[in-house]
Length: 82
Image (tube, rainbow, N blue to C red):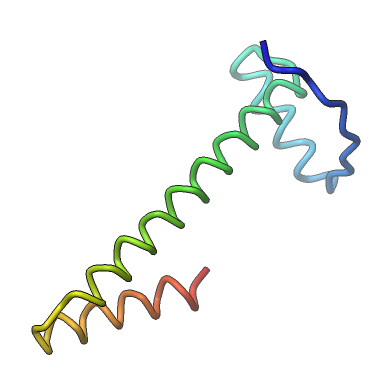
């Protein structure tokens, strides 16, 4: 089993309410719900990073001007829209 590390986190009241509602709906503790949300967020960020590097590699290798333009636009959206 992974070693647990205790952390103290202050949440905005609206966020805390949403976490409690979600936890209740799934019959989890608020703490367990927070852990799942954080783990899911980390996974999403990791996937976004990999998607970016895959797209950048396709952009770098492309020789078709239309594809380069399209991939460049897509890279720009990824960079500037978060």
